[in-house]
Image (cartoon, rainbow, N blue to C red; front, top):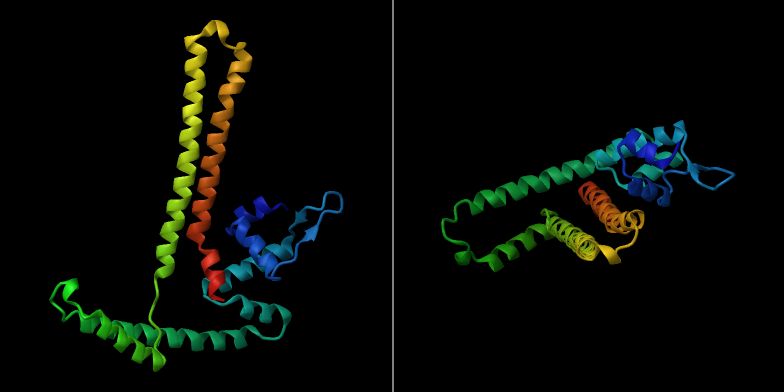
Length: 217
């Protein structure tokens, strides 16, 4: 089975599949004739297990321990439950902090952020962890970068298409044969189409957030 088929069957992007291969969680066979990866039923089963565990928030290293037999599912889940309970306590502390801020009726410019940050630091020294949504800001930048680069290329190809079309129509006696003209016009259209497909794939990758997950573990 090819990687495109695996992507559709399991619902994991090709980039993520290769990421798991790099991490040693997946080891598909190779076609002896062309060297391409070939995925079998066991690989599909492994990917489904990985997908399940990642949805539960387990880190790569914990999955690696289970695969190697150094930890049972129960062992890993007990450790993971400790992490979940700690996160739950952190959320409760964050909720209390937000509840306190609900009493601030003033504007943002009147808020003593330095004092509140110091209070947060004290709580963090006591073991509390607050959510940091900086990675979502980074994700917005990634979207902007993807759309910006793709937009420039698409506009360039559209401009090239209409420029060539204008040239062929304004001076038909100098225009190449019809078949050749169609080929010339098809080139920017094909390039623009490829850019759009690449953009859609990039959007899917950003939404999946696997790169962000990898940085956490």
